[in-house]
Length: 523
Image 1: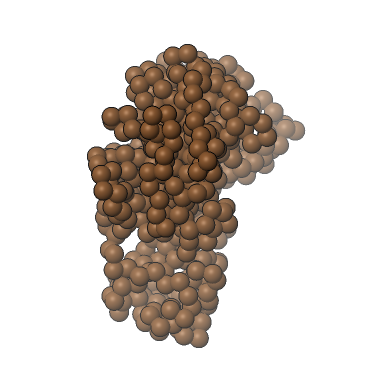
Image 2 (image 1 turned 90 degrees about the vertical axis):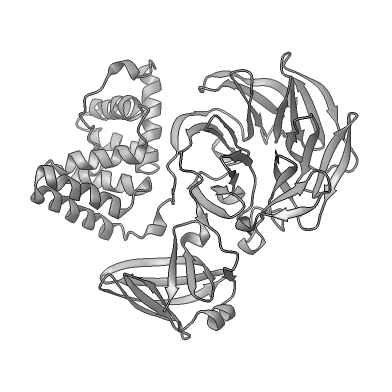
């Protein structure tokens, strides 16, 4: 039973900031948070643990502890877990709860080093015995869970969730009114007619079916009192004051219209993800404006200065797209239509949503649902979302996210350091085959100040890091280096990695390029 008990942190707080929801509302919110923090099904596990002895306690923990207290704004979930860990470390009889919250912190992207540093800091105030016991408990958790960094979401920049709403039907795009307090959401609604929802920017539903009778609406763009909607064969124009479709336009050249963007002077651009064309609206007619074999499946669009920025889905239009066919980010000059690829975005992912932030862009990774920051010379993985993160938008440093397959949208506050990304060296070469690896990297030692290792031509891995022996085997699968290894007595398990090299370095990115990235020097 102890495994599922979540201790509510007893801190001083002001009741004035607690949202005035009903008990039922807070319970539903609590269930979502428990599952998000501890893993899917955790709320049911907690309920089952208390069912025979005190079901009211489970209700209290979920509804009050998580639905009200844990849900308060101002501190992100990872920081809250580190604070709870600090409190539990000082309590001699709370080892079970401490383990539970260490697992939760790891699940939210905290590293073992961040957790141990929290405990080391505590030693100044609580003494070494309590801090040491906490560190040994962390060690037990890492061993019990066969922890490797690649098992956890690489949230390099913490997004603070403001609110989340469900009840949508495959929400694909979201756009914010620049003059009013409204968000508009397109609902593909796969099994029936699609529609547009209207909600307030603080997460209150005005009308799930504000405009109905559409087909499979996708991209949205607002210009003055008009909402443009890419919807299969048609571009719809909705009068937002009346909430009615006032025009629907098509062309025999259209296959499947997707995203829409409008320039400052009112020129409308629409991507046709299936045909590879970019259309523009001229005198209420769709005309082909641009097409290039370099951008086979244009998806998200954004206008910046004199360029149309295009997120290319990839070489193939399929959910099973392989990494070697992933799309990149391009800009096309509005005057002469010259194409430039953002060198930092090469084969970034099956790209979808696109919006500007600071000195770059946020772009979603389509089928893998990664969120990246991109500019001319840098890229950074911001975080990983449930499958189906689609056409996002930003207003005043607040990110709004539609997630197709979760039937939900959410609001996040962006970190101020989002543009402090890792420079991308164009000299990096990705290794795509075993033959290339044998030629370029096998039998060479790579490492850093903590140690070094080598992957030999006969499939063996040897090395020493942090005074512990690293052993394992390697092979190749599709476009990924595969390894099964252990360091000391800790089994690191199996992983598939993206390998990139220069003449003097190797860059490894775990989880098929979606996990943590490390760079080693050639010895």
